[in-house]
Amino acid sequence: MKTTQNGKHFIVEIDDFSLADTLDCGQCFRFVPQEDGSFCGFAGGRYLAMRQDGNQLTFYDTSAEDFERHWKLYFDFDTDYQAIKQGFLEDEVLKKSCDYAGGIRILRQDPWETLCSFIISQNNNIPRIKGIIDRLCKLCGEQVPGGYAFPTPEALAAKSLDDLSIMRAGFRARYLLDAAHKVSTGKIDLPSLYTMEIDEARKTLTSICGVGPKVAECVLLFGFHRLEAFPVDVWIKRAITYFYQDGFPEFARPYGGIAQQYLFHYIRNCPEAIPDEYRRK
DNA sequence: GCCCAGGGAATCG
DNA sequence: CGATTCCATGGG
Image: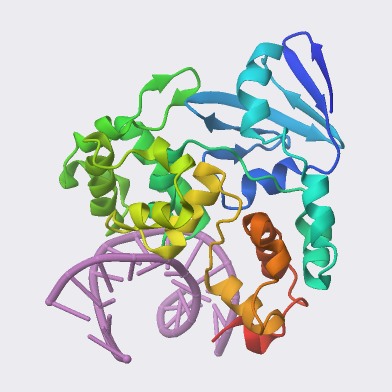
């Protein structure tokens, strides 16, 4: 990875990375693709505009220090994805998935924001999830340069169900309040989940109303970078039924979450990957 | 175990 | 165009 400061902008040269796939694959919801191909959004309360041209990333208005302190971590540039993907190659399906979606990186997102985002994501589609989160940030997020930060647990806990109605989150609104109460009162200590034994972390998360197994795995993977977490939705269920009658390959388990992302995007976007009769049931 | 909640996007006819 | 399908969880 080669980096250079170019005036106000910071340039990173990196192979094997797709900005569009990474920001648009359903792991984060606060980046918006622009007409000129760039992306604008927020992460960790910070605004970022950036673009990709070939193997070159341009971080607009970004200093080397900002990149080192925030964005290098956020985009997980310190993790060796080449080595991880190398391990997937012995499985034919995972190899195809890597070819198709191997530019995706698992972002290191804020746990609280990730928890709320995936509570909202349940039984929902990406455009609408983005809309609800946008309205949530406007409702009680702190104003920062470029827009609104994601609300703190305290700011959200201060709201009533009625206050939340303008979010149009439907039945998920009360789940968000339950999470806000449990986190703001200290009943649940999110940072401890980084190192907690993973089954215990699962139990902690599913003790929040509206957090089932699927949402909990997403939060562990996308919010705590627990790469062994393995979210199973209807698409992954289909893939396992079709490709892996004997179960998902054991050797890929330690990085199951990464494999899951690649597999998910492969089967969702390649109609020929799975026969029609497996696609709906 | 079954059905519904609440909503908007995607897909179908 | 209108009708139907999709989606994860909890509660009756």
